Length: 154
Picture 1 (cartoon, rainbow, N blue to C red):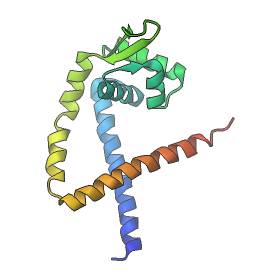
Picture 2: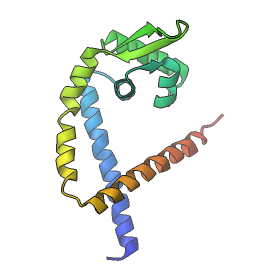
Picture 3: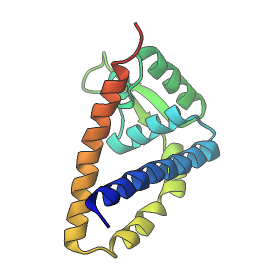
């Protein structure tokens, strides 16, 4: 197989992988009773143990108004709470609730050991290549998102 053919096959596999990941997240959002934006916000809050609304907006790629609406939906569903920052009373921190943590862990928790089992099939050199591809791929995707956002009509 030529290098060009292999690149084309990998490119197609990445698209299929992204679509499969999207299906997993869509299923999780459906089970949790939230939309995809709210699922993203829950994930970010759980990852970082909470954050300001401003940082959540940046991390999720949302406008301030959309972030406020998402936080309100998450509070109403019992998945997030707002509280004054103990270190700076002017700031409000948004954190995921134990309910969010419990339900997300139930859905995504089994992915970790299954993914570890899948990855354990590869050699150290292959794993290093996969890791490098994923890190560079994230940077690539962020660059593409920025490029696409720059095409908004003003």
